[in-house]
Length: 110
Image (cartoon, rainbow, N blue to C red; front, side):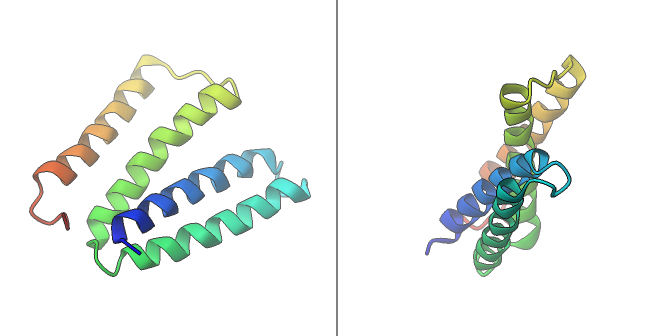
C-alpha cells in the first residue's frame, strides 16, 4: 500500500478513535470504548507502514497537524465546543506548517 495512503488511513483512524474517546466517558461506555481501541490499533499499524517510506518527522508533523485540525472541527460540530480567534489562528498556523513541509521541504518523501 502507498505510504501516503497509509498515513491518511492512520490519521483518519486516529481522528475517529479520539472522537470516540470523548464519547466513551472514561471508558464507561463499551461501544465507543471499542471504537477507541480498534481505531488506535489501526492508526498505529498504518502509521508504522507509512514510516517505511515517509521520514518520521514529516509523518508525525502531518499526523499531528491534520489530526489536530480535524479534531478541532469535530469538537466544534459534534460536541458544540467553541473555538476563540486565538485557537483558530493557532490551528491555521499548524495547517500552514504542514503545507510548508509538504510543498517545500526536501525531506518530504514526494
